[in-house]
Length: 100
Image (cartoon, rainbow, N blue to C red):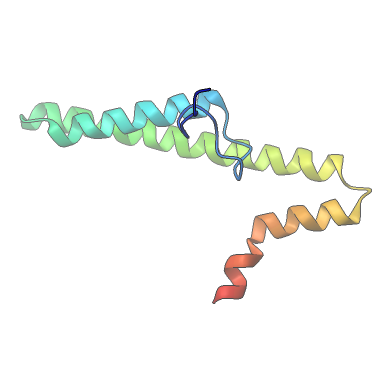
């Protein structure tokens, strides 16, 4: 038996994160590390621009996937009030709200 790392399997709390998104996040992280270790200013600026473009692309994809996931979830469970409210609680993170 082999234990899978979190990089291989998407976190269960965020089912909208797909394999493609994980790869895009990995590329974004590698670009950031390259930017941090770059020595020359021209190379640093080029890597920073690449990182920002890729970061914005990843954030946009995450938002779209999350929105599509919840649209599909609520469309599928519109006849079940229990599952509908379960989805609402997931979105507002009720545990976090009660701690404040």
